[in-house]
Image 1 (cartoon, rainbow over the protein chains, first blue to last red):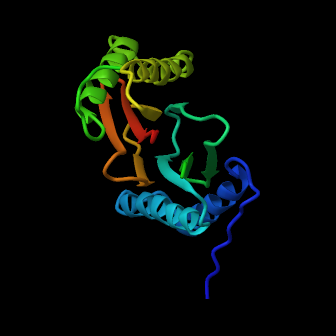
Image 2 (cartoon, rainbow over the protein chains, first blue to last red):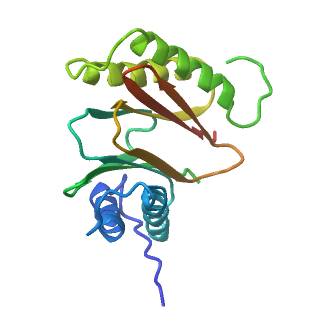
Amino acid sequence: MEEYHRHCEEVGFNAEEAHNIVKDCVDGVLGGEDYNHNNINQWTASIVEQSLTHLVKLGKAYKYIVTCAVVQKSAYGFHTASSCFWDTTADGTCTVRWENRTMNCVVNVFAIAIVL
Amino acid sequence: LDGRNEVGFNAEEAHNIVKDCVDGVLGGEDYNHNNINQWTASIVEQSLTHLVKLGKAYKYIVTCAVVQKSAYGFHTASSCFWDTTADGTCTVRWENRTMNCAVNVFAIAIVL
């Protein structure tokens, strides 16, 4: 039976907790795999959906946005950036960078506090 | 604040704002490893500034990915848990001869 934990004393977004959740999801989906054009659609979708599901299950008052980019390893350049206009005391973000022999993966989590 | 009675996020308006920013930063340029940092930062910052200037009650997140054109694969995905009636997103895809650029805007309604 699952328990919903209410972290009432926590102030702000727990980036470390989110980082661990997302890293486990990426390990589970991409671990042991080589870049494969036929599967990449399914993999990126699984990563964002599973990460989102686990974050929501924490039962905290947040809206979440999860983005994932997977790039085949090559000599070619790849760069990402993000900028946010929000409540810096309550909202937060974390980035998980993952790689293996054939691909790089970058997952961003953006958490917006729900004001009740 | 203008008096428009708009419900929900205006994706078309955001799309035009972002496209103009990307055109302004990357238009006429070739992929350049020395400039890419500055370009992606400019794209997200200028887009964000223009979106905020609309004066609407939204928080914004803008992400930008730039990839040098090659035969190698590149794929992105996103998923959101939010208020589907008030919050919204738009994606701008841009390319030239040497690079692909994808910019995402996520807008979260501020409930006052």
